[in-house]
Length: 74
Image 1 (spheres, one colour):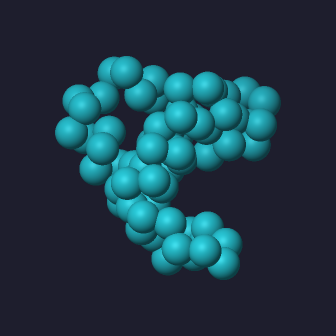
Image 2 (cartoon, rainbow, N blue to C red):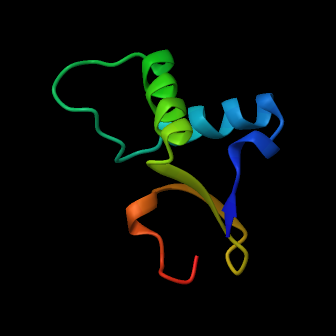
């Protein structure tokens, strides 16, 4: 289920973006990128619709996914 980012409390959204940006396996290439820059990039991608907030009810988990990778029935 897609959760519109504008329906989240701003602090909750910020925490979600920061948590995602600091996960193991989140690689930004060879150069060092600040947490603020990572979060700003994720926020831009959300606003553009390239990335969505996806809630998986069965697992009770939230993730950011590419819009193009969503299941057809999303």
